Structures are given as structure tokens and as C-alpha cells.
Image (cartoon, rainbow, N blue to C red; front, side, top):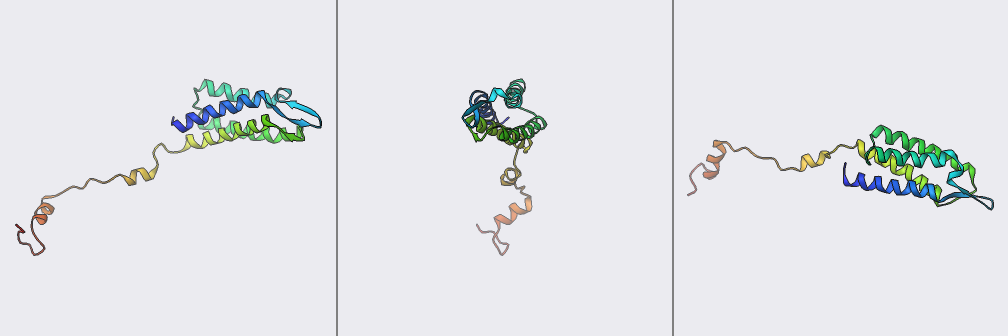
Length: 142
């Protein structure tokens, strides 16, 4: 697990906790808290549980499915309120961070350009060594 993946997993945990604690939005004059809906409280709790179980390293399939479920929940949450609040945006950030974790975990461990940028070792043969000791006309330069 790279440092970027670990930092992104910690940010995801922080966003999931904020999605649980902060209000999701307002409907008229009423503030809607995240724990009023089963999906809006269940998703961040599930994310926290899975990140704790897999010690911040989710398998690509699990993080991809969680990101898809999170996007669906975020869309369904839009119908419950008139104006979004910080809890909704934290839920959206949680889903987005999981999608990014899924993409990062599928990336190759070593980029292909890193292999090409390495200098190649040249093998010297006896003939090349002999040519370098002679000048362009074939005589010794010494």
C-alpha cells in the first residue's frame, strides 16, 4: 500500500465520521440529520467497518462496489431535502474517495515509464575496445 492510498483511506474515514455526525440538509425549516435514514447512516458505518477490518487496504472489488453503492445513496439522499448541508457533502466525499481508492489499487505498482527511464548497461566487446584505441584511419592514436 502506497503512502497516497493510506492518506486517502484516512481522509475517507474522516469524511465518513463527518457524514455521520453532521446534518445532511434542510427540508423547509427542519434540519435533517444523517441518522434519520437507514441508508445515510448505514453506508458510512459500513465504510468504517470495512476499512478497519482490512486495515485501510480494501480489495479493488470491494472499494469499487462500495463506491457504486455510495453514489446511489448520494443520489437517493437528494430527494429528502431542499438544501444540502455538510453531512451530505461529506457523504459525497466518502463515495468519491472510495472510487479513487479503487482506481489506485488497480494501478500497476511500477509505472511503465520508470522501466524505460532506467539507463541500460552496455556490453562492451573486445572489438569495440580495440576500435576505441585506434583512430578513424585504423592507426593507433598514441
